[in-house]
Length: 262
Ligand code: BTN
Image (cartoon, helix red, strand yellow):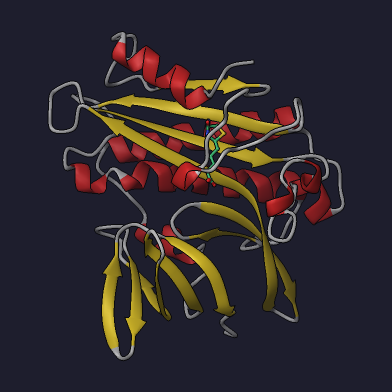
């Protein structure tokens, strides 16, 4: 047990224990102070999920792009690696796991080729430090609910979250899923270190494309619009608001008002 794998990862970085060309992955069975985005807590029941954080340092050979405006791609690759691994482990149709911008992992309920609803199974929390300096670093933490009844964890999440086993109705081998996700992550980080990022792959998993959403851009400030794109350069969500396009770099989709029917 650790307080938060993101904290352990940061401590290792600050202590100079992570080389630029060798990112470090920290994994825990349970956390006493797991954190989510926007000040939320991330609760877990020991042994039911995957809790892990990737520690990266900038420099020669690092998967971190030289331009910090591209660092969002590391979190995207982490989610994509896990999405691929989940579909494989659960024998799901490709595309069943979606990304809800920026990096929530969701399982879609698809009927007749159409997404009828979705539930969150995982999320990503990225934290950066020493920006602009030679020792700049990034921690990307990912939490995934694999087993069990999520309503026992956080009542506030019961309506929107689930675990993989509940969503798929089949047992999932956590260790096999972890091993596969790490192998896929290594491949994706290698590509990033060579300056490659597959924008089409990232776009193809985006759940919100075409949806009407409520988006909290600042505390209490909600913007309602239609998602018209995901920008592969900045990572922004492109929202059409009253006919005007807005590129949103950070925020929280608080409500999907209408799911897009392709
Ligand atoms: C979110 O959806 O709000 C992001 C959740 C991120 C949770 C993970 S669990 C491993 C790592 N350590 C933490 O304290 N948080 C992240």
